[in-house]
Length: 213
Image (cartoon, rainbow, N blue to C red; front, side):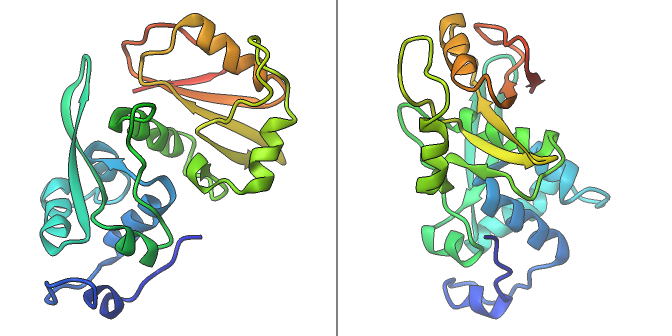
């Protein structure tokens, strides 16, 4: 659950003391706590719109203060762009969030695409990324349909509730082949599905809502 940490509380964990978090900052940090990473384009559209200066100026200031960390993300066809995450685990916790887990299976582009689905779907309050799933959430997908390959579970990147129904969220950074897509779709065939892909993707996703970024 997102928290609204007081500026005075945040200052305790930073060397920089001369700052105040504004309304736009708090809206951004609340969404960041939910999705863990947000690209500059998303921040400009949903948090810092209407300013005389670009969103990057405020975001980079929050980096200088020590609240955020800027990450360079590479996307084929789009090039390199900046995304932002909490600087430390402790700061993320103050706002009820976590830092993204980046590794072999989850690169920065994958995580950004997942967060962009959240915004494309209207920022649903119930949006929950896989890293925040509890035991019951994992069991929900364990008792779902088996994949085409016979696996008993296929955990999505996130899900949310809309009109009383579970909507499964899956981010493809462009690397899934057709069999991988069909495998996942088969496992979630009882759920509504929303997928996110870059404009250049190895395989198309059919019979689902697909956002191209």
